Each structure stands twice: as C-alpha cells, then as structure tokens.
Length: 408
Image (cartoon, rainbow, N blue to C red):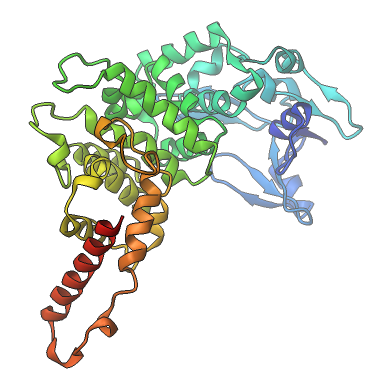
C-alpha cells in the first residue's frame, strides 16, 4: 500500500498559497484492508475513508468510465492494481494532477508544474468531456487564479464548448450547479466566472436568465446602451468583490441590472416602486437552483427595487417607509447592511446631490432617523389599539423622515 498527497494542496503550495485541506490517494489496497486499519468509510459512489487520527480524507485509486449522461453516470473500478498514473489521468486539469509521495518527491506525469509556470489551465486527456461539471470547475479556477495571469488553453475551451453543445449540462443537479457557482462568487474575480460560462455557451443551459442578460439586445426602448449596462454590471461585480466577501451582496449587485433588460415597453421605469417583471426571472433562477432563501430575498430586493432606489431622492417619504416595511428592516436590520455599497449608477439627475455615489449610506442615514420610533414614542399610548398602532407608527416615521429630508 502506497499513500500520496494529491490535488489542490500541492497546487496551492506551488502557487504560494496557504494549504487548508489535504487530499490523500491510496494505491494498492482494498476497502477491507482500510477498514482493518481503523479507517472509517464514507461515500456511496466510491470508497473514501477518514483517517482515525487526523480525520483527513483518503480515497482509493480508481478508474472511471462514462455510462450514460451527466455527472453521476460512471462505472468505477477500485481494483488494488490501479496505478497512480491511471488514477491521475482521470482528473480535470494538469495543475490538479500533481502528486507527492511519503518522501516528499513530486510526481508530475502531465506537466502540471510547467502549466503553473506558464499560467495555463489545461485539460489532461480527452476524457475531460465525460464530466460536465468540469465546465463550472474550470470557470471557477479561472476566476480564482485570473489575478495571477492564468488563462484557459484554447483546446480546453474547445472541449468546454463541446460539452455545452452536447447539452450535458442539463443533467447536472441544482445543488451541484449552485455549489460551484457559490465558489465562483467567492473567488477573487467572480466576474470572470460568468464571462467564461458565457464564452463557452454554458449560461444558456445553467442560467438562461443571466444568458438573456448577456445578450446584446437592440430592441430596448431606453436611453441606455445595452452593451454598456452589461459591461457596467461586470465592473460593479468586480468592484464590490474587492470590498466584501459577502455572497449575497456580490451576486445581488451583479444581478440587479437585469431590470434594465426586462419588458422594455414600460413607459417610465423611474416611476416604479417595485418592478415585478424582472423579479419573475430571479425567482425562477433561485427556485430551480435551490438558492438559499435569504440570498433569494436579497436578490429580489435589489432587482425589484433597483429603479426605485436609483431615484430615491425624488421619492416620497411614504414610499421610502413602505420600502423599509417591504424588506422588513425593522425585524431584520442586517438586510439594509446588504445594500450599504450601492451607488447611483445611471441617473444623470443625481449629479447635483450631495454624496452622489453613496446610495447605500443614504439609505442607512434615512433608516437611522426612523429606526427608534416605537410605541414608546406615542404621546398617549392608551389611545391606540390594534391596527391603529401600526398606522400611528407609520405616520410618525413618515413625519420624522420628512423633517430630516427638509433639513438636508
């Protein structure tokens, strides 16, 4: 039995990153022998074992053969005769197929170290096309490593397009799509993740709503250039990602601009309170991919209220309090923190207003004026009961906000 350190731990160490997780590969043994050594078996599709002391994962060397469509239809062979090279060749990228033996010797059958130096993401073999999830993984690696100058090899991008052409992505589970997308959004440059998926035509099958967003539509009856809005949205995602790692904020700041592409026949987007049409697209996306509920809520708020917030200086205090009620900021004030980095984007009328770019701060200031108004603020508490309490709270909050805005 031989044990090798494999995959991301070696790649990250060669790149100068800190190593958090280590994956081990075991060659020349059987599940029964692993159990005899007190390893605990986990996983149904193929045997992975947990070390009794370190609790790190140890996987048996295996080969796999495509047997149908999608991500899960594979036939696995875990024979103790499987060699290290036979196991590594089934992996996705050369930089992820480097191994290290117990003496610290690097074993690199597929020139992964060379590709790390050249900053290239390259597939190992033609079997790359057998696993559709690799399209998302490569896009994620491109987003994670783009700041180091990494790019996808032309031949690898061709195979990614081939997977999409064969519609293999339609067989991926929602959980796996969101898991990879979450990692992509968590990367240093998440905008690259979506650019790559668009480049290989994956958005059409994974995120048709975002694919619609990426189209250079010419029928939009607005005073905005469609291409520029798309470029701006990607720039905004890049900007936000340099400020915060919060996935809700990152994704919602990017997705909010879908509202400019939906149902162009609206006469005046600026007069809207809540724009329902683009929210339908957002809900479809979130339900299909089983996006966490609170993430879904933030996406809906940012997209549905985008035009309202962009024109908030010209909205009535009644509508602003209605907005606070809608997002339930009284019970969940953290939701307003998700909007703190918003700016005024395209409205030219905002130029003369103080703190032009700080829409998020303006919202925080407005809320601070009314957040402490409660039933204790009533002069005569005994006069109000039931629904009357709600109406009086609303009146006091509107009055306080009006006074503050007048002073400003």
